[in-house]
Amino acid sequence: MAPKLSDSVERLRAAGNQSFRNGQFSEAAALYSRALRVMQEQGSVDYTEESVLYSNRAACHLKDGNCRDCIKDCTSALALVPFSMKPLLRRASAYEALEKYPLAYVDYKTVLQIDDSVMSALEGVNRMTRALMDSLGPEWRLKLPSIPLVPVSAQKRWDSEYHNETPKGKSKETTTAKSRVPSSGDVERARALKEEGNELVKKGNHKKAIEKYSESLSYSNLESATYSNRALCYLALKQYKEAVKDCTEALKLDGKNVKAFYRRAQAYKALKDYKSSFADINSLLKIEPKNVPAQKLQQEVNQILN
Image 1 (spheres, rainbow, N blue to C red):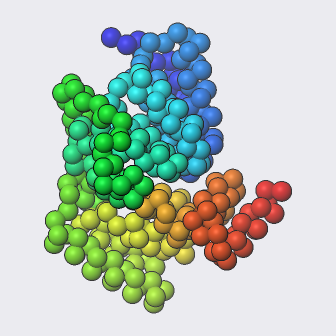
Image 2 (tube, one colour):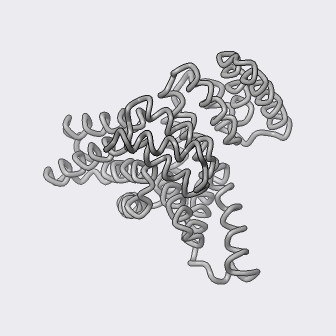
Image 3 (cartoon, rainbow, N blue to C red):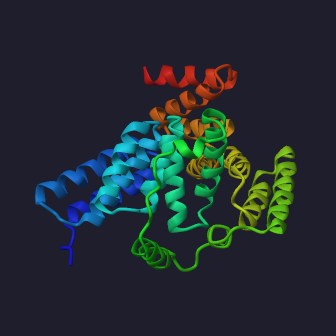
């Protein structure tokens, strides 16, 4: 049985989690690093906790666009606890961002052996399949690294973690939509509600629009635009932290959602997290180098930083 973590490590991890939720990714990474140092100094052998800290720090690197360090930390996390879902998904996203499509494909496929209903992995496999066919030709499967076979014990561990970590009383949006693949009827209803939200935005009724977008997400949370549209409403109502959260969800679904990058950059600027704002603008301009509003926002944030 693993020894109880010191209060110092627990406090540092909790503080890192809070900073991450607030969109302070650099600060969160520093806190996770401090927690790892404390564990190493104490000679802790709690591999699960150490793996979580590496995985959490990897998430910070991914948010900051530091894909190489994200991959390193995910690999460290997986060396401690093999076939952990979150570091596999984060490493896959980092590989994809670096256009290392064969490695991203392998990680996404590994996730699907653990849980074949993980939508981000299903969508990742589809994206990688298209990219690999384009780059390697019709025999692309023959050129892939081998996909590891996930042991049954890892699948059971994931099932246990999922059931133990699902809090009671979660909103319909987080339980109904995320725990199952929506039916075609759910998707159609979600799209109709999103359109109703769009019409309310045009009329300037942002509070009602948020209700429509939230209802849409309770039927299907697979459309990036619904999150980024709701983020626009939160920005209009000066609810900047909520805007950051929705843009982050939007970018998980579509890593090239320009509006999500722009709106999150605006929200970070309002929260005075100028480094994160600048990082998002840079990510946006890599996708659309001639985006004039983003260029203007970049100048504004750059003046503040300098």
